[in-house]
Amino acid sequence: MATSISRRGFLRTAALAGGLLTSGALIAACGGGAEPTPTPAASGTPVTLEIGSKGDALEYDKTTLEVPAGSKVTLNLKNNASPGSGVLHNWVLVRPGTLDAVAADGIAAGEANGYLKPNDNRVIAHTKMAKEGETVSVTFDAPPPGTYDFVCTFPGHATLMRGKFIVK
Image (cartoon, rainbow, N blue to C red; front, side, top):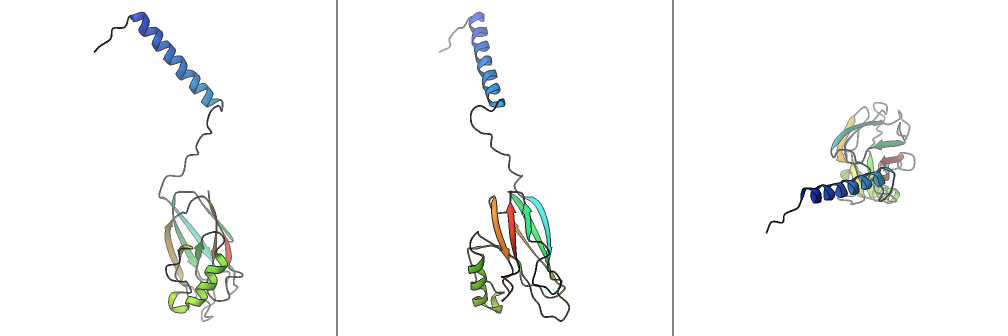
């Protein structure tokens, strides 16, 4: 059933509604009400990271890597060890607080498994083992914002080859 409204009633209702909308916009603009939600990076935004070993030293050339939340990360690991040195490296991103356990379990898993426990849910992403002069890559979705650890799980390397992976 339709209801009739006078022109004066319509204008009064419209003015009241407009005033409420304007007041709400002013409160929001002045910081009143709930905190604004930060705008996340577009889902799947591609990010490429480069990391390598420092020659024959058991060190990565970077100890901190940073990516935006929601990004699609491609990490390239270059093993810069001398030809014939037999030094292998990988790059393993792990959940916070699990680095040492993942490395220990990787050693127990052995060479046949790339020094990674198969189907380890503490591992977010990893490369395969890189031989001297070789570059290996992995592509993965950035985990939720926070600070994560990365490590080389080749036996004896985890104590020195580690770093922080920061998702903002």
